[in-house]
Image 1 (cartoon, helix red, strand yellow):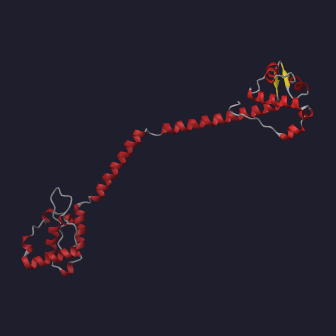
Image 2 (image 1 turned 90 degrees about the vertical axis):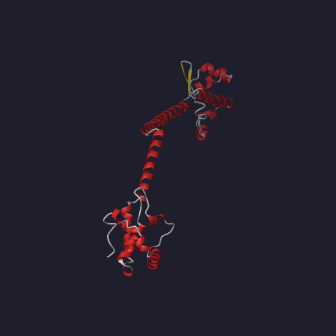
Image 3 (image 1 turned 135 degrees about the horizontal axis):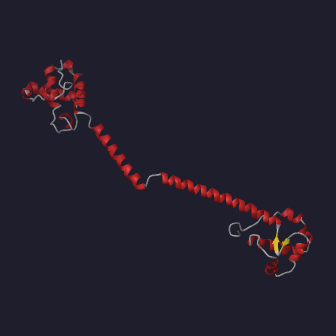
Length: 227
């Protein structure tokens, strides 16, 4: 007890107004020392033992005036017993709360999967995310062809359908295992500028006659003529 609660409550008003102050200073000193010893021993003090410890026989005087009680050789100090009882109750409450808290933590820990499992799950989630990213990056070539054709359709007013079809077939060409079409492999690609160059080559070199038409390998959405 002395280690867990190394002090007891001392109310100065009760001391000054109590019967102890009617006694001489020596007896007052015996009483306060007896209180300290009583607290240290957690209320288990014998009369004979106290006399030896304090080296005085005046403890009997404290019993006579009622400040200390004696029963079968054991001493009792009421106000300290009250404090010891309060502390014991408080100690039990704290102990019970601690046990409940420990039980909750244990239950929570048991409900959580092992760290290794968390790491495995995290790796799986990362792999799934990477797969989703790859899927989002590799949009169907046919879909991208349709988008390219839509952009090319904006130039129908100033270009012949044959020119647009050849241009489309050439730049959307790809092998069976290719993930990109020809125009996607370019560092930069502007349909307007490329189309202008295409028309110039058609005019100057007859470039259109050498173009390999790959429309036979495209879907219906990708081979619609620009008419």
